[in-house]
Image 1 (cartoon, rainbow, N blue to C red):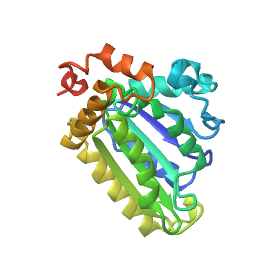
Image 2 (image 1 turned 135 degrees about the vertical axis):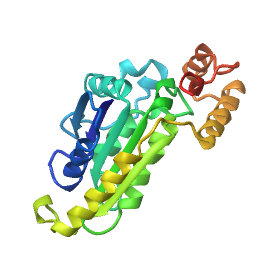
Image 3 (image 1 turned 180 degrees about the vertical axis):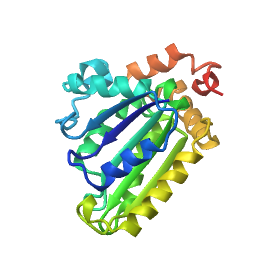
Image 4 (image 1 turned 30 degrees about the horizontal axis):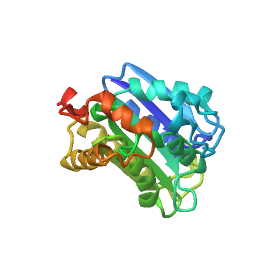
Amino acid sequence: MKVTIIHGQNHKESSYHAGRFFIEQLNDVEDIHEFFLPKDLPAFCMGCYRCMHEGEDHCPHYQYLKPITKAIESSDLLIFTTPVYCLHVSASMKALLDHYFTWWYTHRPKAIMYKKQAIIISSGAGAGMKSTIKDIKTSLSHWGISNIKTCGFRSQAIHWNEVNEKNKQNIQKKLIHIAHSLKQPHITIKIKIMFMMMRFMQIKKWSACQKDYDYWKEQGWLNHKRPWKLYE
């Protein structure tokens, strides 16, 4: 199994340690790619739409995105960790997700996403884990990933070494359970329905741009081909 883990912060505290602990519970890991934000993507999406009209490699921040994209595409399991920032993801994690909006069903989804699994880990001293997880899960679902596990936990501390031992054990038990529950990816009905709705929009040429329509046509999705049939 190839794994990519993306941390929504540079510091190594609760969500970081939870993510690393989770990886340790996996028995068949061959390769791990690890990224820290904003160190590995020190820029916000500017809304220039060059990725839409010219292609992803024309993004002004392509040199930062290229290794992250390569790692995501080559991995079987994606792990996203982030602390709660004002009841939502960190700004750096949001910036990453914004850069990949062309991967959404509405635009140019990647067939390879249908065979991936993901886990989202969020830590907060008090509240906000659910809304933080939802921020990331929304994007991953629109990428076409059906198999998304989540783990939100209240650390009740700022630093990992300040989290009491009983709380750590409960967090670790939850992560162990999730690690053991991973199985062969399956495509949900909801994901298929969303795809077919977007397909209808493309057929009607309600695309955001010509490049989107051309992409769907090249993939054969406007006819009988479906991205998940490669992996079912």
